[in-house]
Image 1 (cartoon, rainbow, N blue to C red):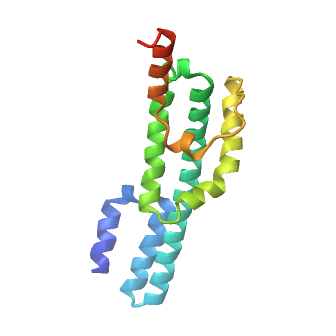
Image 2: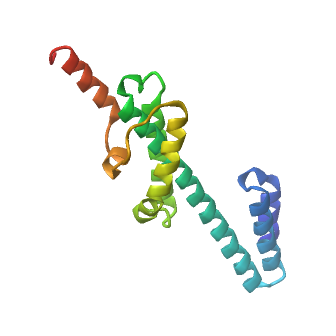
Image 3: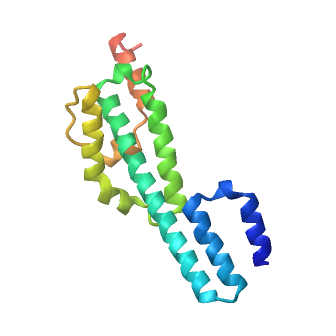
Length: 161
């Protein structure tokens, strides 16, 4: 069984990055020679690495999401031109995926990372734009539909049509 698994991995290396593949291959080799405890240790190390990678990715998506929310709030008239709405949906979806597939990436984790992500997002947004917003709420980042804001503004500017 372990030999078949190693052969399969050798044929499908694209499913695992370099180090991850090596750790998994080591675990299988340990299983082949009956070293179950060492195989388990390797698999647990691989799991920890993958969790760390997903947390790092979730933090990045939170920062980019916040950056695009900031830009939409500051410059709603430009949100379509610069595709900020699409980016907001994309990064919300990616964070939601991590929250479903990785129990350690949850609301508590995101709230813990909130201040640092906001500071980085604001700094990135300030590089090209003058941003006045000093805070973001959970609702602004994860719940507001920004496409609707532009429609409401256009209706108000056109006399409520």
